[in-house]
Length: 445
Image 1: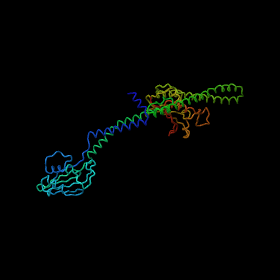
Image 2: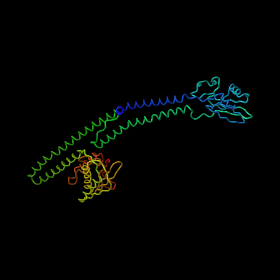
Image 3: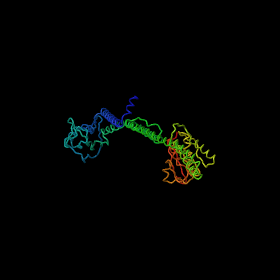
Image 4: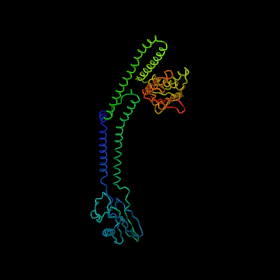
């Protein structure tokens, strides 16, 4: 059973669709043959001359397929509309009732509307007979005079749905019901691997180190998953190679900087101070670059982390040194991640908020299956055109500021890298009351 299911699961979408269509056609035909065999051919509704005579003569007879409506009136019925009369038929009815022709009336519609009638296709002037017995497929009005009053028998109005139409509707309904399980199975078989594929691809987009897309489902999805996994591997190798190269260059620059600093010791004081300032700035840039490279080296270790507890420790440390950092909210907020990397992320955001806003307020809460953290400051905010570039490495809102008044433009880049490594997102927005708001959202554990 498992092997058969695996073979069916490996079929292409085209093959699956073709098989479902063929199976639906077979099921519909089986239902139709079953109904035809069970019900037989539909009988056209008609009334015999003998049935009219038995009804008017009040004679015992078997239940009629189309019972006649009997009424009594003081005057005989009159011919109107599409009704016509035939003297031979009237005389035949009078003989069967054993009364004079003057005491009998017989009107009928000559047309045969029934598509299933064995007499369909006759000319209007032909009289329908079966074994010399007149039969009437449409409206019939017959009457006999008895004791000065007229007994009238006429066919009832045609129903909205004829028996054969009801059978056709039953056939179509049962065929549709029989197709529902097959359609449900087909839709589930097609959409389930697609949804799994979309979720896996989305995880890769949020976290490049996420597991590869499962190579299962229809042949088309398997080919797509294989191509996506190959692309993921190539991108990971490319990023790792470039990151390692940047780290190696930054690390190797320390040696020539150290030699320059040693040789400049004998230079005159004004020149030595300027060169030493440049050397210190280069060292800070190298240290920041190495830190950025380390932040992109993702750790495979993932453990449950309580963001509320982690943020609480950071806020307590900031308050111990007199920095204006506060936090709001209660209760655990569990996510899966690296506690050290997450601490570095929020430390960078706190440092930026203190440097440019003076004070920082942090709030965290559950949100739609995830955890949202807001870091707000009271500073001037950011220019709208710079918000989109703020996460670019080495991008600074004020290029003229020195190392003492601002960083190197790597804090937000590192924060975004860590957030994305945890399957989260980070976004900036200016507050309506002034200041900047950084919003981080992580999937809940």
